[in-house]
Each structure stands twice: as C-alpha cells, then as structure tokens.
Length: 357
Image 1: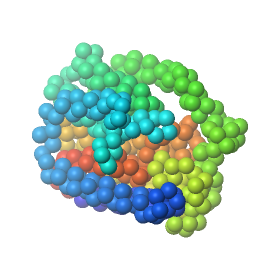
Image 2: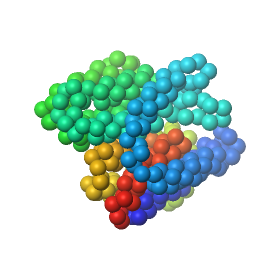
Image 3: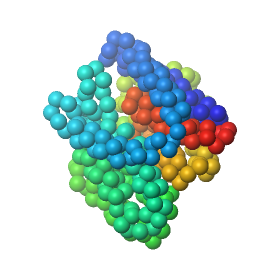
C-alpha cells in the first residue's frame, strides 16, 4: 500500500501544481483559469480507474499481449502522419485528433515495448544471452524509435533508446554484447542533433543561452530564473512569477521550474524523495515477483518512469540541452498521466500477489 500511496500522492500533487502553473495562461487563452485543471482532473480520475482495474488483473494474462500491443503502438505512431488525423503543434506532429480527444501514441509505445520485451524474454530465459534472441527486441525498439523520431520527438526517442538498452540489461544480456549496441547508440546522438538545424541551435543555446536570449536560449534562461528565484523555501504556493507567460510550457515540460520557484530547494527535494521512494518500492516489488515475466514487466515500467523523471530534471536545470519531455505523473498531459497510472496499476498488481508493498 505504501507504493500505491506514493503514486497517488505524486499524481495529486501534479494536479495542484498544474493549476498553479496554468491558471494565468488558461485565463488569457481560454477565458477559464481552470481549463488545464479540469483536463488534468479528468486524466487523474480516469487514470485512477485504469490503475484500479489493472491492479485487479493477474499479470500473467498480459503475457500474450506483447505482440498485439506492439503492433497497435506501431500503427498509432504511423497514423499521426495521416493528414487530418495527426495534429501538429510547434512544428511537431505527435498527437492523434479523435474528435475532442487527443492522444499521444509515443506514451503508449513505451508501455507496449516493455510488455513485448518482457513476454519475449520470459518465453525463453536463454534468449537474452544470444544475438538471435535479442534481435526481435532490438527490432521493436528501433522501429518505435524511428517513428517517434520522425514526428519529430528526440526526447522520447532518447527515453525509448534508454529503455531498450535497459530491458536488455535487466533481462540478463551479457555486458560485452550490450556494449556492442551501446556504442552505435552513443554515436547516433550527435549525428541526430547535427541532422536537424533546430537541434543544433538548441545545443548551442544550451552551451551559451545568453548568446540567443530572445530565441533558442529564452526558455532555459527563464527556467534558470525560476530556479534561482525559489531559493531555499520558495516564494509561496501559487505565487510564481515566471508562469505569467515568461516561461513557455510552464504547466507541462517545465512545470518543475514553477514548483522550484514556489516551494524552493526543499520543496523540490521532497518531490524527488517521493519519486525516489516510488522507484525504490517499484524495484523492490520486482525483486519479489513470482515469475521472470513479472520481474521484467515491473522493472521495465519503473525504469521508464525513473529515466523520464531524471531527464526532465536535467533539462529544467540546464544540465542537458532543452527537449520537450513531461515530468511523469506531474506535468499536464492526459495521455502521459493515464498511461503512467495504468502502468503503476500493473506494478501494484504484482505487489498484491506477493504480500504488502
């Protein structure tokens, strides 16, 4: 129950901070300061329902769902390029428009990949130790990454790449074999950055944001202002100044900047202690799993959650080049929130079958 309490508490804090970060921009753009809050509350309650339903499901039933989930994820990712179906924002086509509902397939793709990889390796525990055995997982990961990159979405592509290597490692792939695949991935990162001018500009802005304070460096500078303004204890809840249209995407990718400004260093420390607690309990649940499939399923879900949270924090603090990536369970975005809570429901389902969590 401690794991579940931590997950729900983090998501509830997310609802609170989404309102704080978005109330002004929602009032200006939509004439309703509760616009983003209403959407986040909807995702929160739908996510809790998904969490509850999946927590009652025997994880063994998911073992055969890997291939259908992977095919569905590939189809949804490809569908964003269909004119009239895919929705474009700020030059990226990452969403599907289904009437009043928007869906971000890349969020589903991470969970589908974990499900596929766990089922594939659990079918034969010797597979992670042979090249032939890991090729299907590599093929699935590269295919998903390629479609996500075409959106373009380099940040989620990086998470998917890390998840692919993480699943191979957690399944027991020898380090020497893993290194053979890690080297091309590391070499591909600078190549992907150089391939697109806007990525190169972001990298230059990361190295010296003050060289373009009104363009590529603007967002990072405003984020750093928010972090500095928060000091130790913050300026107070709902009192952020950067959210008044100074900091772009304050309610989503850069919500951590607003949290830091309003609650200070100690507030952010408490937030990441809670995230760390969830990750710790999740991996502890994995260590007590009944089967190899359940172990891989839980570790994959928790690994994706931990990598995304860490990368978001590094972006906001200026430790890595700016890239659009939500803070899981906290940032605005119903697809991310719903899928993450559903994944946590699977983790809790494994926990329930091994005693208290």
